[in-house]
Every structure is written in structure tokens, then in C-alpha cells.
Amino acid sequence: MNDAIQSFDLKSIRAQFPILGEKIRGKDLVFLDSAASAQKPRAVIDAMVHAMERQYANIHRGLHWMSERTTEAYEMARDASARLLNANDRSEIVFVRNSTEAVNLLAHSYGRSIMKPGQAVLISGMEHHSNIVPWQMLRDSHGIELRVAPITDPGELDMAGTEALLADGKVGLVAITHMSNVLGTYTPAERLAALAHQYGAKIFFDGSQAVVHRRVDVQALGADFYCFTGHKLYGPTGIGVLWGRRELLDAMPPFLGGGDMISSVSYERSTWADVPHKFEAGTPAIIEGIGLNAAIEFIESIGYPAIAAHEAALTDHALAKMSAIEGITVIGRAQDRGGVISFTLDRAHAHDVATLLDRQGIAVRAGQHCAEPLMRRFGLDSTARASFGIYTTHEEIDALADTLGRIREFFA
Amino acid sequence: MFEDVRDLYNAAILERGRRPRHMGKLEAFDTTAKGDNPMCGDRVTVWLKFAPDGTIGQTGFDARGCEISKASADLMVEAVQGRAPADTKAMFERFRTMAQSGECPSCAEFEPLKPLAAVHAYPSRVKCATLPWHALVAALDGAANATSES
Image (cartoon, rainbow over all chains, first blue to last red):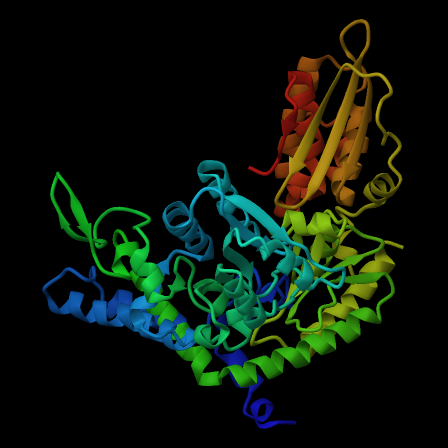
């Protein structure tokens, strides 16, 4: 056992999540739906409550003590996000509502100004709808071609197929997940960035899942843009981050117009504030920003080596357990994968599986996981999905596996 | 384990969900519609053939989804047999009330559908039970598509 695992005290981590003490119909909550949204530690809850009770005003504009202190607290989230991603500068951190808004910002601003009709955006066959639909809208409004990189049966990116789609040099932007929310697959980010740049494209990673589970260094990856959302990272809903290289953000026009994003306004013309405020129109999610800062500090207090080691052990255990159950098929067998496991059971539909698990206090997701094209790729209508977090235990996975076996008997 | 779900996953539902009696496309039909729940992936297609008097003469369906949606579709086919379109739509309203509340407004005619009443205790599954009815009503109204996700 290495140092990382030894320093990981699961019991004390779980004690920091008040909701894990809840009972569901008299049974312990087994929360295996963290990929949809993670639970919140005490530090995040307290930081948000403290802000509302003791230190709150609108930010960036008040000339009074409360506004100044609140601005400081909110802007700490920008520093924390810059540390989290190893951004070159805090001004490269643009706050958005969530990953979906980050992709839409990019499609609107970069897609409609920097990209030119006739160019292409390359996504992959394992994207969340949020990294498909904004690009379709760009295609339809702006004459940008949309290309889809193929994936293999084990659920990995087909690198030869990806390179073939880049070869004609028309792709201006590669927009791809860093970790699939269905298959658990990590995409080879460094190789992809190098490949994109070799063919003259910029690259954006949807890090909604990845940043929860492993250290992301946008400079080491060679990324041009990267996004994540707060609520999957043990933080609040309503706040996320789009990171971009400064010179790219500088060249991009604003997304939304309004207060906070201007330098000066007259009826004839307005000029824009500098990055990042150019992209942050209106009063932002102040309380949520303060919560995001607390969430990132929480992650830092544990450290990615320990988080990654814990989740790798959980994933190995879960795959072994589930493979041993007759009738269970795990979708996706990528070499480099994390704690998101989609599966089907031969005798029961995913919804029925989820309902019966729920009756035992076990929360999983069932459905298409906002990834309908990926479901079709595997010839499926829906799967059940168990996803793990920092607080997930081996015993919870055993409970899942045991209950799945009994569900199969129930539908015999 | 699972004794507490027998209210919904009762013998009638399991039997109908797994061995539906009326599943299949009609060779000849007057109207058809698709019910689609994109968030969960369920899809039910309904085909209708009217009798000479304008009542529902024959119903077929194809369902891709859970036990509840398939059982509901199969029971629905029998419940609407011989009913006029307006009467069928009124029945859907009463069925929806039952699915949401567990109460059946006119219990005698609902006897065959009562195995689904327990779905009210599973709020996220009510839409599974109502999807085939949404498709049926869409077919009666001449609409191509319907959803129960709203």
C-alpha cells in the first residue's frame, strides 16, 4: 500500500459529508450517482452559509466594506480554479453557470468569430449532449462542418480514425471529453492536443468528469480551452469554469452583454472589459463562487494522488464484482478508465433495476445519460450507471453487486 | 428483499411486461403515433384501426422500455377496445389521475388497469405508465409524436 492510500482516511472524509448519514426508507444511503452531481462536504455548506449570514453584498461595484470582503471571497475561487488547472494566469479563468454554458460560450464566441464557414469542429462519439448540440447549432447557423471521431468497441477513442478526420486541415477546433460520463473512459488528452496542433486545430476539453478524479494540468496537456462544473466537484450548482489561453480569450468577442462586462457604455458604442470580465455579464453566482472555492480547497486538502488511488481501487473492485454476476454486461472496457460504470442486466430494464436498487437505498442513474448517440453506438436504449466519489466505500460496491444478483433472481 | 416493491411489481405487471399479449404492429391501421421519453430512452409506438362505428376496433403497439411501460401499453389495449375516441381520451385523464394519486375515479371500469395504481408511490415512474396513453391520444388527435416527460 502506498503513501497516498495510507493518508486517505475514508471514515473522516465520509464524516465531512452530512448527507451520508441520511436513511432512505430506513436503509443507509448508498449514493452511487456522483457523476450526475456529487454530494457536498461540510466546508462547502459552511462557506456558503457563512457568506449569506455574515459577509454578503454585490461584488466588483460597491464602495463599502461588505462589497469589498465579498469580492475578495468570490475572487478567491478564481485563484483556486487557476491552481486546480495549473492555469498560467488567474485572468484565464472565466466563470460560467456550468459546463453546458462553457461550451455554448465557446461555440458562440470562438465559433462565430474566430472560426470561418467551411472550417470544421471535431467532436467524438462519446460526448455528452452538451458537447454535441451547441456545435450542431453552430453548424446550422454558421456553416461550420461537424465531424465525429469514431470510438472502438471497448469504448476508446479510435486514434487512427481521429487523425483521418484531421488530415485535410479543415478542423479549426477539436472539442472532446476528457472522461466519458457513460463509459468512464479517459481520452488520451496529451496525444490529442499534439495531434490537433499538428493539423492546425485548437483543442477544447470537457473536463466535467475528469477533473473530479485526476489532476488536470492544462499547460502540461497542451490544451487551448478546458471546462468543468462545480457541482460534480463537491461544490454547488450554478458555477463552473471555462479556462482558455489568454491570447485566445483576448481575441474572442463577448458572449452575453450587460453589466460587469463593459469598459464604457454610450448609446453609440460600448467597449468591453478585459478578460475574464468581458465574458461575465451581470451579477455572477456569488455564493456559489464562494462555495466553489471551498470545494477546491477541500480537494486540495486530500490531494489528487490519494483521490485517484482510492477511486482506482474502487473501480477495479467494482469491475471484478460486477463481472462475476451472471447476466451483467459492463459497457466500455477502456484501458484508462475511472469510476463510472454503465451496465445492463439481461433480465430487467435499466429503469426497473434502478427502482429496485432504490428500494434498498442504493442510488444509481438509469437512462441515456444525456448521450443518446453513444447509446445507439452500442445498440442500447438505456443503461444503469453506478458512479463513484471520494466518499464511496468497497462495502457500498459489495451492496450494489449483492443487490444486483438478487434483482436478477427477482426477475427470473 | 423486494417484498416492498410487490405493490407495483405485482404478478399482473410482471406477466404483462414480460409477455405482452398485444405487442406488434397492425398490418392495416388508420392512425399511428410515437411516444418518446428522450431523457430515459423509452419509446412506445401505437397503431389504431377503427371499427365501422368509429370506435377503436383494434390496437397494436411496439414498446422499447421498462416492465411498467410495456405492461401499461398491453393493459391499455384491452381497456380502450370498443371505446369512442372522446371516451378514450376521458379514460386517459382518469388513468393519469390514478397513476398520480393511486385513487381510481370510477373503479369498476378500471379493474383491469388497477395493477398500475401503485405506480403513484414511485414518482419517477409515473411517466413510464402514462407514455403509451400519450401515444394513443396523439394517434387519435392525428399527431405524430408525444411525450410524458414534462
